[in-house]
Length: 112
Length: 115
Picture 1 (tube, each protein chain N blue to C red):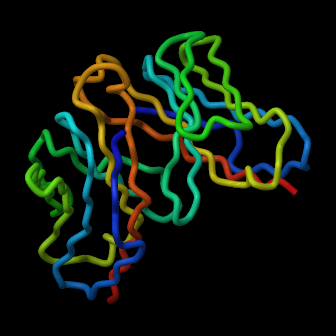
Picture 2: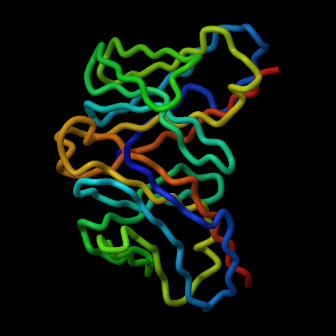
């Protein structure tokens, strides 16, 4: 069975400092990885997908299959980045490939 | 604009009551999901549906059932509410084929308190 681990429940950084939110996964096949974000009083929404190799709001994430990691990074944190971040895994194909397995989430707090 | 709506933002129910949570999406998505979100536990999948009248158990289906009579509507039913079902409930939908993206679109959530 697949699993997603986010080791930090809470991460506090100062404004302007680099941010790295950790995500590790276990899955024997070829997964697709995602980061979802939930800002205060807003609905959960997609931030980025590894397959798109894009940068959204200054965030990037690289899938490292050797280390089974998909860490989310941003070089300079902003106050508006404060939110709850969830890493999620989707099976690449086959039965159940529309399901997502979520990590427990990391709350990012950016200190002014 | 993508839209998933949930019938209530807040609900207060008593132990033993039957509770209905409704979710509607206007994107013609085939897949719909119910999660509960608890601090420190993240999102846990209760049930999902990949087509009308089809349903599959998720990770924590005990104490819950679902109904999908129309494509746009997915209902979560608590047959006899208990205090340990106090939680935030999130509905989501996604299109098929799944290979196109893993993006799920979420509703605003229903915060349920069972007394």
